[in-house]
Picture 1: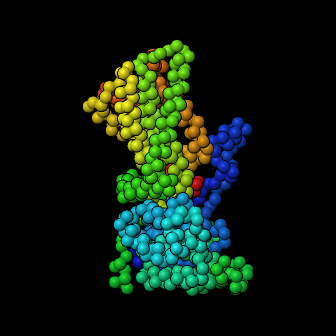
Picture 2: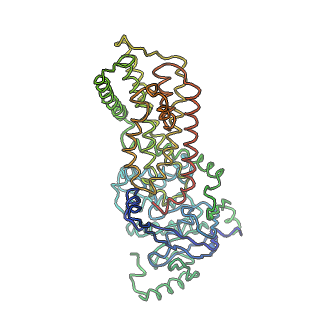
Length: 259
Length: 297
Protein backbone atom coordinates (compact mmCIF):
# COMPACT_ATOMS: atom_id res chain seq x y z
CA UNK A 1 0.00 0.00 0.00
CA UNK A 2 1.39 3.40 -0.91
CA UNK A 3 2.45 5.42 2.10
CA UNK A 4 0.20 8.40 1.38
CA UNK A 5 -2.98 6.32 1.63
CA UNK A 6 -4.60 6.53 5.05
CA UNK A 7 -7.59 4.30 4.48
CA UNK A 8 -7.83 1.76 1.70
CA UNK A 9 -11.11 -0.03 1.21
CA UNK A 10 -11.05 -2.92 -1.23
CA UNK A 11 -14.34 -4.27 -2.54
CA UNK A 12 -15.97 -4.00 0.86
CA UNK A 13 -19.34 -5.61 1.42
CA UNK A 14 -21.06 -5.74 4.75
CA UNK A 15 -24.18 -7.72 5.46
CA UNK A 16 -25.79 -8.58 8.73
CA UNK A 17 -28.95 -10.18 9.89
CA UNK A 18 -31.22 -8.57 12.38
CA UNK A 19 -33.97 -10.27 14.26
CA UNK A 20 -37.42 -8.86 13.66
CA UNK A 21 -38.59 -10.01 17.09
CA UNK A 22 -39.19 -7.38 19.71
CA UNK A 23 -36.80 -9.01 22.12
CA UNK A 24 -34.60 -11.98 21.53
CA UNK A 25 -35.12 -14.23 24.52
CA UNK A 26 -34.86 -17.89 25.27
CA UNK A 27 -38.55 -17.82 26.20
CA UNK A 28 -39.48 -16.54 22.73
CA UNK A 29 -37.20 -19.11 21.09
CA UNK A 30 -38.93 -21.93 22.97
CA UNK A 31 -42.42 -20.58 22.22
CA UNK A 32 -41.50 -20.24 18.56
CA UNK A 33 -40.18 -23.80 18.44
CA UNK A 34 -43.46 -24.91 20.02
CA UNK A 35 -45.38 -23.32 17.18
CA UNK A 36 -42.90 -24.67 14.64
CA UNK A 37 -42.13 -21.21 13.40
CA UNK A 38 -38.82 -19.99 12.10
CA UNK A 39 -36.99 -17.06 13.54
CA UNK A 40 -37.94 -13.97 11.57
CA UNK A 41 -34.76 -12.32 10.44
CA UNK A 42 -33.97 -9.72 7.89
CA UNK A 43 -30.69 -9.50 6.06
CA UNK A 44 -29.44 -5.98 5.70
CA UNK A 45 -26.96 -5.22 2.99
CA UNK A 46 -25.39 -2.21 4.57
CA UNK A 47 -22.49 -1.77 2.15
CA UNK A 48 -22.09 -3.23 -1.32
CA UNK A 49 -18.76 -3.55 -3.13
CA UNK A 50 -17.18 -0.34 -1.98
CA UNK A 51 -13.66 0.44 -3.18
CA UNK A 52 -11.94 3.66 -2.26
CA UNK A 53 -8.54 5.09 -1.30
CA UNK A 54 -8.51 7.98 1.12
CA UNK A 55 -5.14 9.75 1.15
CA UNK A 56 -3.53 11.21 4.26
CA UNK A 57 -4.52 14.77 4.97
CA UNK A 58 -7.83 14.67 3.21
CA UNK A 59 -11.09 15.63 4.82
CA UNK A 60 -13.82 13.47 3.42
CA UNK A 61 -17.49 14.17 3.90
CA UNK A 62 -19.95 11.33 3.68
CA UNK A 63 -23.48 12.14 2.60
CA UNK A 64 -26.51 9.99 2.00
CA UNK A 65 -30.06 9.43 3.10
CA UNK A 66 -30.87 7.65 6.34
CA UNK A 67 -30.02 3.98 6.12
CA UNK A 68 -27.48 4.50 3.35
CA UNK A 69 -24.75 2.71 5.32
CA UNK A 70 -22.82 5.75 6.50
CA UNK A 71 -22.56 4.74 10.13
CA UNK A 72 -21.80 1.14 9.18
CA UNK A 73 -18.95 2.36 7.00
CA UNK A 74 -17.54 4.41 9.87
CA UNK A 75 -17.78 1.49 12.27
CA UNK A 76 -16.04 -0.85 9.86
CA UNK A 77 -13.19 1.65 9.35
CA UNK A 78 -12.87 1.79 13.13
CA UNK A 79 -12.60 -2.01 13.21
CA UNK A 80 -15.81 -2.47 15.17
CA UNK A 81 -17.75 -4.26 12.44
CA UNK A 82 -15.74 -6.85 10.51
CA UNK A 83 -16.27 -6.92 6.72
CA UNK A 84 -18.41 -9.67 5.23
CA UNK A 85 -16.32 -9.47 2.05
CA UNK A 86 -13.37 -7.39 0.99
CA UNK A 87 -10.73 -5.72 3.07
CA UNK A 88 -10.02 -2.49 4.92
CA UNK A 89 -6.50 -1.31 5.54
CA UNK A 90 -6.06 1.55 7.96
CA UNK A 91 -2.71 3.26 8.23
CA UNK A 92 -2.63 5.17 11.48
CA UNK A 93 -4.21 5.61 14.86
CA UNK A 94 -7.98 5.91 14.66
CA UNK A 95 -10.06 7.99 17.00
CA UNK A 96 -13.76 7.45 16.74
CA UNK A 97 -16.53 9.82 17.51
CA UNK A 98 -19.34 7.63 16.42
CA UNK A 99 -22.73 8.73 17.67
CA UNK A 100 -21.09 10.02 20.85
CA UNK A 101 -19.07 7.09 22.04
CA UNK A 102 -17.80 8.51 25.28
CA UNK A 103 -20.22 8.31 28.15
CA UNK A 104 -20.98 4.67 27.80
CA UNK A 105 -21.78 4.46 31.46
CA UNK A 106 -24.21 7.09 32.71
CA UNK A 107 -23.58 6.35 36.35
CA UNK A 108 -19.90 7.27 36.05
CA UNK A 109 -18.64 10.84 35.97
CA UNK A 110 -17.42 12.52 32.81
CA UNK A 111 -13.88 12.26 34.11
CA UNK A 112 -14.14 8.49 34.71
CA UNK A 113 -15.74 7.96 31.33
CA UNK A 114 -12.96 9.83 29.57
CA UNK A 115 -10.28 7.82 31.37
CA UNK A 116 -12.05 4.51 30.74
CA UNK A 117 -12.72 5.27 27.08
CA UNK A 118 -9.06 6.12 26.61
CA UNK A 119 -7.90 2.97 28.38
CA UNK A 120 -10.22 0.89 26.20
CA UNK A 121 -8.65 2.58 23.19
CA UNK A 122 -5.29 1.34 24.42
CA UNK A 123 -3.80 4.58 25.75
CA UNK A 124 -1.62 4.72 28.83
CA UNK A 125 -3.09 5.98 32.06
CA UNK A 126 -0.28 8.55 32.41
CA UNK A 127 -0.85 9.90 28.89
CA UNK A 128 -4.55 10.15 29.63
CA UNK A 129 -4.05 12.03 32.88
CA UNK A 130 -1.80 14.47 31.04
CA UNK A 131 -4.34 14.98 28.26
CA UNK A 132 -7.30 15.20 30.55
CA UNK A 133 -6.72 18.88 31.34
CA UNK A 134 -6.76 19.75 27.62
CA UNK A 135 -9.90 17.70 27.11
CA UNK A 136 -11.73 19.30 30.04
CA UNK A 137 -10.59 22.78 29.00
CA UNK A 138 -11.74 22.29 25.42
CA UNK A 139 -15.10 20.82 26.41
CA UNK A 140 -15.52 23.72 28.83
CA UNK A 141 -18.45 22.20 30.71
CA UNK A 142 -20.30 24.29 33.29
CA UNK A 143 -18.90 24.34 36.83
CA UNK A 144 -18.15 20.95 38.30
CA UNK A 145 -20.08 18.93 35.74
CA UNK A 146 -16.98 16.98 34.79
CA UNK A 147 -17.21 15.13 38.13
CA UNK A 148 -20.95 14.49 38.03
CA UNK A 149 -22.51 11.30 36.65
CA UNK A 150 -22.96 11.60 32.91
CA UNK A 151 -26.67 10.87 33.14
CA UNK A 152 -27.01 14.42 34.53
CA UNK A 153 -25.54 15.91 31.34
CA UNK A 154 -27.57 17.63 28.69
CA UNK A 155 -27.25 16.37 25.12
CA UNK A 156 -25.10 19.38 24.29
CA UNK A 157 -22.71 18.78 27.17
CA UNK A 158 -22.47 15.15 26.17
CA UNK A 159 -21.53 16.10 22.63
CA UNK A 160 -19.00 18.68 23.72
CA UNK A 161 -17.14 16.21 25.90
CA UNK A 162 -17.24 13.48 23.25
CA UNK A 163 -15.92 15.81 20.57
CA UNK A 164 -13.24 17.11 22.90
CA UNK A 165 -12.03 13.59 23.65
CA UNK A 166 -11.92 12.60 20.00
CA UNK A 167 -9.92 15.59 18.80
CA UNK A 168 -7.56 15.77 21.77
CA UNK A 169 -6.39 12.18 21.53
CA UNK A 170 -4.12 13.29 18.65
CA UNK A 171 -5.55 10.78 16.23
CA UNK A 172 -4.05 10.23 12.80
CA UNK A 173 -7.48 9.41 11.51
CA UNK A 174 -10.53 11.04 13.00
CA UNK A 175 -13.97 9.60 12.35
CA UNK A 176 -16.89 11.88 13.17
CA UNK A 177 -20.46 10.71 12.92
CA UNK A 178 -23.19 13.32 13.27
CA UNK A 179 -21.51 14.89 16.25
CA UNK A 180 -21.28 18.39 14.89
CA UNK A 181 -24.95 19.02 15.42
CA UNK A 182 -24.51 19.24 19.17
CA UNK A 183 -23.16 22.21 21.02
CA UNK A 184 -24.05 25.84 20.70
CA UNK A 185 -22.81 28.27 18.04
CA UNK A 186 -19.69 29.17 19.99
CA UNK A 187 -18.68 25.55 20.50
CA UNK A 188 -19.43 24.77 16.88
CA UNK A 189 -17.07 27.53 15.79
CA UNK A 190 -14.41 26.18 18.15
CA UNK A 191 -14.93 22.69 16.69
CA UNK A 192 -14.44 23.95 13.14
CA UNK A 193 -11.24 25.72 14.15
CA UNK A 194 -9.95 22.56 15.79
CA UNK A 195 -10.80 20.49 12.74
CA UNK A 196 -9.17 22.96 10.39
CA UNK A 197 -6.08 22.78 12.56
CA UNK A 198 -6.12 18.96 12.47
CA UNK A 199 -6.47 19.08 8.69
CA UNK A 200 -3.45 21.36 8.43
CA UNK A 201 -1.44 18.86 10.45
CA UNK A 202 -2.02 16.45 7.57
CA UNK A 203 -4.44 14.37 9.55
CA UNK A 204 -7.22 12.49 7.88
CA UNK A 205 -10.80 13.17 8.81
CA UNK A 206 -13.97 11.43 7.72
CA UNK A 207 -17.18 13.24 8.61
CA UNK A 208 -20.69 11.94 8.32
CA UNK A 209 -23.16 14.79 8.33
CA UNK A 210 -26.41 15.99 6.87
CA UNK A 211 -25.25 19.57 7.13
CA UNK A 212 -24.07 20.05 3.55
CA UNK A 213 -23.05 23.64 4.06
CA UNK A 214 -20.59 22.62 6.74
CA UNK A 215 -19.24 19.80 4.62
CA UNK A 216 -18.72 22.21 1.72
CA UNK A 217 -16.72 24.47 3.98
CA UNK A 218 -14.57 21.86 5.73
CA UNK A 219 -14.07 18.99 3.32
CA UNK A 220 -11.68 18.49 0.45
CA UNK A 221 -13.74 15.69 -1.01
CA UNK A 222 -16.97 13.87 -0.42
CA UNK A 223 -18.62 10.57 -1.10
CA UNK A 224 -22.27 9.89 -1.58
CA UNK A 225 -23.67 6.63 -0.34
CA UNK A 226 -27.07 5.36 -1.33
CA UNK A 227 -28.44 2.01 -0.15
CA UNK A 228 -24.95 0.75 0.54
CA UNK A 229 -23.50 1.76 -2.81
CA UNK A 230 -21.19 4.62 -3.53
CA UNK A 231 -22.81 6.77 -6.20
CA UNK A 232 -20.20 9.51 -6.31
CA UNK A 233 -16.80 10.36 -4.93
CA UNK A 234 -14.87 13.48 -5.72
CA UNK A 235 -14.72 17.19 -5.23
CA UNK A 236 -16.98 18.12 -2.35
CA UNK A 237 -19.20 20.77 -3.98
CA UNK A 238 -19.86 18.57 -6.99
CA UNK A 239 -20.89 15.62 -4.86
CA UNK A 240 -23.12 17.63 -2.55
CA UNK A 241 -24.76 19.29 -5.56
CA UNK A 242 -25.42 15.91 -7.10
CA UNK A 243 -26.84 14.71 -3.82
CA UNK A 244 -29.10 17.75 -3.57
CA UNK A 245 -30.35 17.21 -7.12
CA UNK A 246 -31.09 13.64 -6.17
CA UNK A 247 -33.01 14.73 -3.12
CA UNK A 248 -34.79 17.08 -5.51
CA UNK A 249 -34.89 19.88 -3.02
CA UNK A 250 -32.47 22.26 -4.71
CA UNK A 251 -30.27 24.54 -2.69
CA UNK A 252 -32.78 25.34 0.00
CA UNK A 253 -31.27 26.75 3.16
CA UNK A 254 -32.46 23.85 5.32
CA UNK A 255 -30.36 21.35 3.37
CA UNK A 256 -27.26 23.46 3.72
CA UNK A 257 -27.78 24.31 7.33
CA UNK A 258 -27.10 22.13 10.23
CA UNK A 259 -30.23 20.26 11.25
CA UNK B 1 5.34 17.52 2.26
CA UNK B 2 7.88 14.85 3.09
CA UNK B 3 8.49 16.33 6.52
CA UNK B 4 4.79 16.18 7.21
CA UNK B 5 4.54 12.62 6.11
CA UNK B 6 7.38 11.54 8.37
CA UNK B 7 5.11 12.43 11.31
CA UNK B 8 2.72 9.71 10.32
CA UNK B 9 3.48 6.58 12.23
CA UNK B 10 3.33 3.35 10.33
CA UNK B 11 0.63 1.71 12.37
CA UNK B 12 -1.18 -0.46 9.86
CA UNK B 13 -4.32 -2.32 10.76
CA UNK B 14 -6.04 -4.69 8.38
CA UNK B 15 -9.67 -5.67 8.84
CA UNK B 16 -10.77 -8.73 6.94
CA UNK B 17 -13.72 -11.12 7.00
CA UNK B 18 -13.32 -13.76 9.65
CA UNK B 19 -13.62 -17.14 8.06
CA UNK B 20 -12.05 -18.91 10.97
CA UNK B 21 -14.10 -18.68 14.13
CA UNK B 22 -11.25 -17.38 16.27
CA UNK B 23 -9.26 -14.25 15.43
CA UNK B 24 -5.46 -14.61 15.46
CA UNK B 25 -4.92 -15.27 19.16
CA UNK B 26 -1.45 -13.83 19.61
CA UNK B 27 -2.35 -10.24 18.61
CA UNK B 28 -5.65 -10.63 20.45
CA UNK B 29 -3.94 -11.54 23.69
CA UNK B 30 -1.33 -8.83 23.18
CA UNK B 31 -4.07 -6.20 22.82
CA UNK B 32 -5.80 -7.68 25.85
CA UNK B 33 -2.65 -7.43 27.94
CA UNK B 34 -1.99 -3.88 26.75
CA UNK B 35 -5.43 -2.81 28.00
CA UNK B 36 -5.44 -4.73 31.28
CA UNK B 37 -5.62 -1.41 33.14
CA UNK B 38 -9.03 -0.86 31.56
CA UNK B 39 -10.50 -3.97 33.19
CA UNK B 40 -9.05 -2.94 36.54
CA UNK B 41 -10.21 0.68 36.36
CA UNK B 42 -13.66 -0.24 35.04
CA UNK B 43 -14.14 -2.47 38.07
CA UNK B 44 -12.80 0.23 40.40
CA UNK B 45 -14.91 3.02 38.91
CA UNK B 46 -18.06 0.88 38.92
CA UNK B 47 -17.56 0.06 42.60
CA UNK B 48 -16.96 3.73 43.26
CA UNK B 49 -20.18 4.72 41.50
CA UNK B 50 -22.05 2.32 43.79
CA UNK B 51 -20.19 3.61 46.87
CA UNK B 52 -18.76 0.15 47.43
CA UNK B 53 -15.32 1.64 48.01
CA UNK B 54 -16.48 3.38 51.19
CA UNK B 55 -16.03 1.68 54.58
CA UNK B 56 -19.78 1.21 54.92
CA UNK B 57 -19.86 -0.20 51.40
CA UNK B 58 -17.69 -3.15 52.39
CA UNK B 59 -19.85 -3.69 55.50
CA UNK B 60 -22.83 -3.84 53.18
CA UNK B 61 -21.07 -6.33 50.95
CA UNK B 62 -20.27 -8.62 53.87
CA UNK B 63 -23.68 -8.23 55.50
CA UNK B 64 -25.60 -9.73 52.60
CA UNK B 65 -23.91 -13.17 52.49
CA UNK B 66 -23.66 -13.14 56.31
CA UNK B 67 -27.42 -12.72 56.71
CA UNK B 68 -28.08 -15.34 54.07
CA UNK B 69 -25.75 -17.74 55.85
CA UNK B 70 -27.69 -17.23 59.10
CA UNK B 71 -31.00 -17.84 57.32
CA UNK B 72 -29.69 -21.01 55.71
CA UNK B 73 -28.19 -22.14 59.01
CA UNK B 74 -31.56 -21.80 60.74
CA UNK B 75 -33.21 -23.65 57.87
CA UNK B 76 -30.69 -26.47 57.90
CA UNK B 77 -30.85 -26.84 61.71
CA UNK B 78 -34.65 -26.90 61.62
CA UNK B 79 -34.65 -29.56 58.92
CA UNK B 80 -32.06 -31.62 60.77
CA UNK B 81 -34.01 -31.24 64.04
CA UNK B 82 -37.29 -32.27 62.39
CA UNK B 83 -35.71 -35.48 61.18
CA UNK B 84 -34.17 -36.13 64.58
CA UNK B 85 -30.82 -35.98 62.88
CA UNK B 86 -28.24 -34.41 65.15
CA UNK B 87 -25.54 -34.85 62.54
CA UNK B 88 -21.87 -34.95 63.27
CA UNK B 89 -20.02 -32.18 65.01
CA UNK B 90 -21.51 -29.23 66.81
CA UNK B 91 -23.94 -26.62 65.56
CA UNK B 92 -21.10 -24.20 65.20
CA UNK B 93 -19.35 -26.56 62.78
CA UNK B 94 -22.42 -26.49 60.56
CA UNK B 95 -22.58 -22.71 60.70
CA UNK B 96 -18.89 -22.39 59.85
CA UNK B 97 -19.29 -24.76 56.92
CA UNK B 98 -22.27 -22.83 55.57
CA UNK B 99 -20.47 -19.51 56.07
CA UNK B 100 -17.26 -20.31 54.21
CA UNK B 101 -19.19 -22.31 51.61
CA UNK B 102 -21.56 -19.43 50.89
CA UNK B 103 -18.78 -16.85 50.81
CA UNK B 104 -16.91 -18.96 48.25
CA UNK B 105 -20.10 -19.71 46.35
CA UNK B 106 -20.97 -16.03 46.13
CA UNK B 107 -17.59 -15.26 44.63
CA UNK B 108 -18.42 -17.66 41.79
CA UNK B 109 -22.03 -16.53 41.48
CA UNK B 110 -21.07 -12.84 41.38
CA UNK B 111 -18.67 -13.64 38.54
CA UNK B 112 -21.57 -15.27 36.71
CA UNK B 113 -24.22 -12.62 37.27
CA UNK B 114 -22.03 -9.52 36.90
CA UNK B 115 -20.00 -11.03 34.08
CA UNK B 116 -23.16 -12.32 32.43
CA UNK B 117 -24.55 -8.83 31.96
CA UNK B 118 -21.19 -7.10 31.42
CA UNK B 119 -21.42 -7.14 27.63
CA UNK B 120 -25.07 -6.18 27.21
CA UNK B 121 -24.68 -3.32 29.70
CA UNK B 122 -21.74 -1.87 27.76
CA UNK B 123 -23.52 -1.65 24.43
CA UNK B 124 -22.46 1.94 23.90
CA UNK B 125 -18.81 1.16 24.32
CA UNK B 126 -19.03 -1.91 22.09
CA UNK B 127 -20.71 0.03 19.31
CA UNK B 128 -18.15 2.80 19.41
CA UNK B 129 -14.79 1.32 20.14
CA UNK B 130 -12.78 -1.65 18.99
CA UNK B 131 -11.08 -3.50 21.83
CA UNK B 132 -10.87 -7.11 23.05
CA UNK B 133 -14.33 -7.62 24.52
CA UNK B 134 -12.96 -10.18 27.00
CA UNK B 135 -11.99 -7.16 29.10
CA UNK B 136 -15.64 -6.64 30.11
CA UNK B 137 -16.29 -10.00 31.83
CA UNK B 138 -12.72 -9.86 33.16
CA UNK B 139 -13.56 -6.62 34.89
CA UNK B 140 -16.62 -8.26 36.48
CA UNK B 141 -14.43 -11.06 37.83
CA UNK B 142 -12.11 -8.47 39.37
CA UNK B 143 -15.13 -6.80 41.01
CA UNK B 144 -16.40 -10.15 42.30
CA UNK B 145 -12.95 -10.89 43.72
CA UNK B 146 -12.83 -7.53 45.46
CA UNK B 147 -16.23 -8.16 46.98
CA UNK B 148 -15.13 -11.62 48.10
CA UNK B 149 -11.92 -10.55 49.85
CA UNK B 150 -13.45 -8.76 52.88
CA UNK B 151 -15.59 -11.82 53.66
CA UNK B 152 -12.48 -13.87 54.49
CA UNK B 153 -11.42 -11.89 57.59
CA UNK B 154 -15.07 -11.94 58.69
CA UNK B 155 -15.02 -15.71 58.55
CA UNK B 156 -11.79 -15.84 60.53
CA UNK B 157 -13.21 -13.53 63.24
CA UNK B 158 -16.41 -15.56 63.51
CA UNK B 159 -14.36 -18.73 63.63
CA UNK B 160 -12.12 -17.44 66.46
CA UNK B 161 -15.04 -16.13 68.53
CA UNK B 162 -17.20 -19.19 67.86
CA UNK B 163 -14.58 -21.79 68.74
CA UNK B 164 -13.98 -19.99 72.08
CA UNK B 165 -17.69 -20.11 72.92
CA UNK B 166 -18.48 -23.58 71.61
CA UNK B 167 -16.29 -26.12 73.39
CA UNK B 168 -17.73 -29.08 71.44
CA UNK B 169 -16.37 -27.85 68.14
CA UNK B 170 -14.15 -30.21 66.20
CA UNK B 171 -12.88 -27.44 63.95
CA UNK B 172 -9.14 -27.25 63.65
CA UNK B 173 -7.36 -23.94 63.50
CA UNK B 174 -5.06 -22.51 60.91
CA UNK B 175 -2.26 -24.82 59.85
CA UNK B 176 0.02 -25.18 56.90
CA UNK B 177 -2.93 -26.78 55.11
CA UNK B 178 -4.34 -23.26 54.89
CA UNK B 179 -1.74 -22.64 52.20
CA UNK B 180 -4.29 -24.26 49.89
CA UNK B 181 -6.60 -21.29 50.33
CA UNK B 182 -4.99 -19.15 47.57
CA UNK B 183 -5.18 -22.17 45.26
CA UNK B 184 -8.90 -22.52 45.97
CA UNK B 185 -9.44 -18.81 45.31
CA UNK B 186 -7.54 -19.12 42.04
CA UNK B 187 -9.64 -22.11 40.96
CA UNK B 188 -12.91 -20.37 41.87
CA UNK B 189 -11.76 -17.21 40.05
CA UNK B 190 -10.83 -19.13 36.91
CA UNK B 191 -14.07 -21.13 36.95
CA UNK B 192 -16.02 -17.93 37.54
CA UNK B 193 -14.23 -16.24 34.64
CA UNK B 194 -15.07 -19.14 32.33
CA UNK B 195 -18.71 -19.07 33.41
CA UNK B 196 -18.80 -15.27 33.04
CA UNK B 197 -17.57 -15.58 29.44
CA UNK B 198 -20.16 -18.25 28.73
CA UNK B 199 -23.12 -16.37 30.18
CA UNK B 200 -22.01 -13.01 28.76
CA UNK B 201 -22.13 -14.53 25.27
CA UNK B 202 -25.44 -16.27 25.90
CA UNK B 203 -26.92 -13.04 27.18
CA UNK B 204 -26.17 -11.34 23.85
CA UNK B 205 -28.18 -13.98 22.02
CA UNK B 206 -30.90 -14.51 24.63
CA UNK B 207 -31.57 -11.45 26.72
CA UNK B 208 -33.38 -13.38 29.42
CA UNK B 209 -30.27 -15.38 30.31
CA UNK B 210 -29.60 -13.23 33.37
CA UNK B 211 -33.17 -13.82 34.61
CA UNK B 212 -32.83 -17.56 34.15
CA UNK B 213 -29.49 -17.34 35.89
CA UNK B 214 -31.18 -15.96 39.01
CA UNK B 215 -33.33 -19.09 39.39
CA UNK B 216 -30.74 -21.46 38.00
CA UNK B 217 -28.12 -20.11 40.38
CA UNK B 218 -30.28 -20.90 43.40
CA UNK B 219 -30.92 -24.48 42.26
CA UNK B 220 -27.23 -24.85 41.50
CA UNK B 221 -26.44 -23.67 45.03
CA UNK B 222 -28.72 -26.34 46.55
CA UNK B 223 -27.08 -29.00 44.39
CA UNK B 224 -23.61 -27.90 45.53
CA UNK B 225 -21.93 -28.99 48.76
CA UNK B 226 -22.51 -25.65 50.49
CA UNK B 227 -25.52 -26.28 52.71
CA UNK B 228 -24.66 -29.96 53.09
CA UNK B 229 -21.37 -31.76 53.60
CA UNK B 230 -19.79 -33.51 50.59
CA UNK B 231 -19.54 -36.81 52.51
CA UNK B 232 -23.33 -36.92 52.80
CA UNK B 233 -23.37 -38.29 49.25
CA UNK B 234 -22.78 -42.00 48.75
CA UNK B 235 -22.50 -44.34 45.78
CA UNK B 236 -23.63 -43.00 42.44
CA UNK B 237 -24.94 -39.85 44.10
CA UNK B 238 -21.36 -38.70 44.26
CA UNK B 239 -21.60 -37.96 40.53
CA UNK B 240 -23.42 -34.82 41.65
CA UNK B 241 -20.17 -33.71 43.22
CA UNK B 242 -17.91 -34.24 40.23
CA UNK B 243 -20.31 -33.32 37.42
CA UNK B 244 -20.97 -29.97 39.07
CA UNK B 245 -18.44 -27.46 37.66
CA UNK B 246 -18.09 -25.92 41.11
CA UNK B 247 -18.47 -29.21 43.03
CA UNK B 248 -14.82 -30.22 43.38
CA UNK B 249 -13.61 -26.75 44.33
CA UNK B 250 -16.38 -26.39 46.94
CA UNK B 251 -15.47 -29.82 48.31
CA UNK B 252 -11.88 -28.56 48.50
CA UNK B 253 -13.17 -25.57 50.45
CA UNK B 254 -14.75 -27.87 53.04
CA UNK B 255 -11.67 -30.06 53.26
CA UNK B 256 -9.28 -27.18 53.81
CA UNK B 257 -11.35 -24.73 55.89
CA UNK B 258 -13.51 -27.08 57.95
CA UNK B 259 -11.60 -30.35 58.18
CA UNK B 260 -8.20 -28.66 58.23
CA UNK B 261 -6.69 -31.19 55.86
CA UNK B 262 -5.05 -30.93 52.47
CA UNK B 263 -7.39 -31.67 49.56
CA UNK B 264 -7.17 -35.09 47.94
CA UNK B 265 -5.39 -35.40 44.60
CA UNK B 266 -8.72 -36.31 43.00
CA UNK B 267 -10.29 -33.09 44.32
CA UNK B 268 -7.37 -30.98 43.11
CA UNK B 269 -7.34 -32.62 39.71
CA UNK B 270 -11.08 -32.32 39.20
CA UNK B 271 -11.19 -28.69 40.37
CA UNK B 272 -8.23 -27.79 38.13
CA UNK B 273 -9.78 -29.61 35.17
CA UNK B 274 -13.08 -27.74 35.60
CA UNK B 275 -11.33 -24.37 36.05
CA UNK B 276 -9.13 -24.72 32.97
CA UNK B 277 -11.92 -26.38 30.99
CA UNK B 278 -14.39 -23.59 31.76
CA UNK B 279 -11.91 -20.87 30.78
CA UNK B 280 -11.10 -22.66 27.51
CA UNK B 281 -14.73 -23.40 26.62
CA UNK B 282 -15.99 -19.99 27.73
CA UNK B 283 -13.06 -18.26 26.03
CA UNK B 284 -13.66 -20.06 22.74
CA UNK B 285 -17.39 -19.41 22.88
CA UNK B 286 -16.88 -15.71 23.68
CA UNK B 287 -13.92 -14.79 21.46
CA UNK B 288 -15.22 -16.65 18.42
CA UNK B 289 -18.46 -14.65 18.64
CA UNK B 290 -17.39 -11.32 20.00
CA UNK B 291 -17.08 -9.66 16.57
CA UNK B 292 -20.75 -10.43 16.14
CA UNK B 293 -21.67 -8.50 19.30
CA UNK B 294 -21.70 -5.07 17.65
CA UNK B 295 -24.56 -6.02 15.29
CA UNK B 296 -26.55 -7.88 17.91
CA UNK B 297 -26.41 -5.49 20.76
